[in-house]
Image (tube, rainbow, N blue to C red; front, side, top):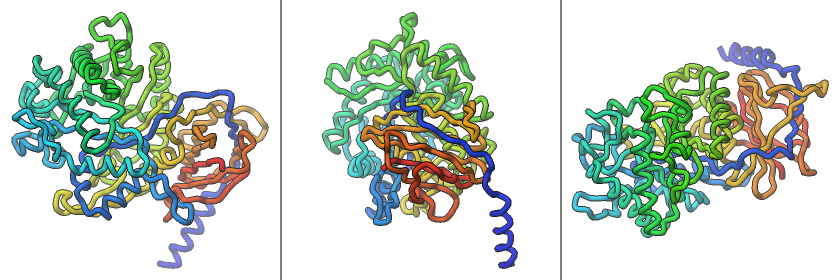
Length: 517
C-alpha cells in the first residue's frame, strides 16, 4: 500500500505538468482604478465566547486574524485584517429562551430595562476590539441586526410573527438614535476604541427576515431605513460624533439594482437613497452619510458568468450616482454547489480558491473599496475563517486555522488601507493582447495594487490543476518581487517562496502574492 501511494503521487505529479500557455501580465501604471480601504471580518457571534477564553488562546486567534508581523523566517503570523465588524447586540441574551433565538446566536445589550447602561456587557467582543487595535487595526465598524428589544414592536430581536416593515415602534426612532450615540461614546470612553462606521440595519431586504430567523434581525422598507438614518444623523450631529452612518448592508446585490424576492418598498436601493427624485428617502445630503452603498455578495457567485455580469451592472449603476461600493459580508451558501454548499467546514483550498475568485470579481468588476468575510470563527459550517471544536457550547474549546483564512490573507495581509488598484494588460507569447486575460475563472486570475508606501502588490489565483509559467515585469524600476504562496501543501500558508525578477511558475490550485521589496 505504501509503494502504491508513492507511485500514485508520481503519476499525479506527471499528469498535472506545466501548461504550455505562457502569458505576460503588465501593470497598466497609468490606469488607476478604485482605492482599497480595508479587508475585514466580524466578531458575530463568536467573540462573546472566545473573548473570554484563556489569554494564550485569545492571543493566538488575534495573531491569526490581525497580525502584520513576520516570524524569524519571514513567515507572516496572520492575515492582517484592517477593519473589524462589531456586532452591537439588541438584548436577546438577557431574554433567554423567551427570545426565540438560538442560544449560540443571542447577544447582550448595553442598555438595561431601567434605561441605564451596563458597561460590563459584551466583554468578550470588546476584548477582541482591543486585541485588534493592539495589532494595528485602525478601522472599526459597529453593525446592528436589530434595535434593542425595549424598542421593538414585538418585544423581540427577531421578526417572528411579523411582516416586512421594520421591527421598531413608531415612537422609538429617536431612542434608537440616542442608544447608538451613547454606545459609540461609551465604548470609546471605556475601551479607547473609536468606531469609524455604524451600520444601523443589516440585510433589511433579506427574504429570510419575513419569517423570523433564529438570530437577531429585522426587515425594513426603504422609508424605514431613511427615517432611522436621519434620526441617527441628527443625534450624531448634535453630539459632534464623527462616526459615518453606513447603508444599507443589502443581503443581495440584486436588491440594490431592482426588485428581488421582495416588494418595491425594499428594492432599487441605489436609486431610492441617492436619486434626488426620491424625495421621501434621499440621503445624499445627510450629515454623516458618505456616498457609499454596502451590500453582501451572497447568492450572486454562480453561474460564474453571471457573477461578473451583475458586478459590472452594479459598478456602472453606482458610477451613475457617483457612489462607491463596499462588500461587507460573505460566507458559503447552498447555491455555491461547486464546493458542495455551506454544510461542513472545509480546511482545504477548495473553499479558499472559490472565495478568492469571488474577491477577485468584487474588486475587479464591482470596484469594491472594502471587502469582508462574515464570521471570523464558526463551527462545522463554511461560515468561519477559524474552526472551533467545543463540547460545552464554546465555554472552552480549540481553534484551528484554515486554508480559507490564509487564502483571504493573500489580499488582506499585503494590500493595505489606501492602496490603489491598477488595471492589468495581458499578452500571449506572440505579444498579442489577450481579451479578459486577467480573469480566467477556472485558470489564472490576477489583480494589481500600489500601496501608500509605494510597494506594488499583485495577487495571482491559479484555479486550475496545472502549473502555469508567467512573466510579471517589474514596475517603477523595482529590483525584484517577493512571493508568498497559499496552497494545500502543508505549511504553505502565506509562505515566502522566494523572489523573482519577472519569470515565475504558479503552482496548481494556489494563490500567490507578488510584492516589491
